[in-house]
Length: 70
Image 1 (cartoon, rainbow, N blue to C red):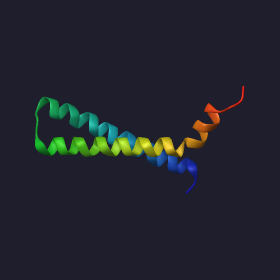
Image 2 (image 1 turned 60 degrees about the vertical axis):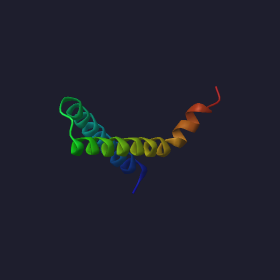
Image 3 (image 1 turned 90 degrees about the vertical axis):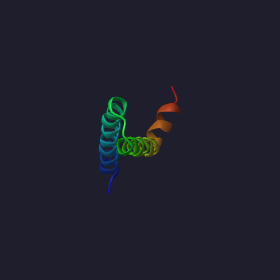
């Protein structure tokens, strides 16, 4: 699998996790429920993990951008 496909998969999964987290967050706020809260916590943890993976996948670009000689 090439880098572009890895970026796409991680980004799409992060978007889905963020949307689930946002929707369940509103649901917990409006009508608290234990199942919704667990779903919200799981989606939020998945989103954080995927963002960490996203940053790690882009680490070469980050290094090149930060340490570029001017």
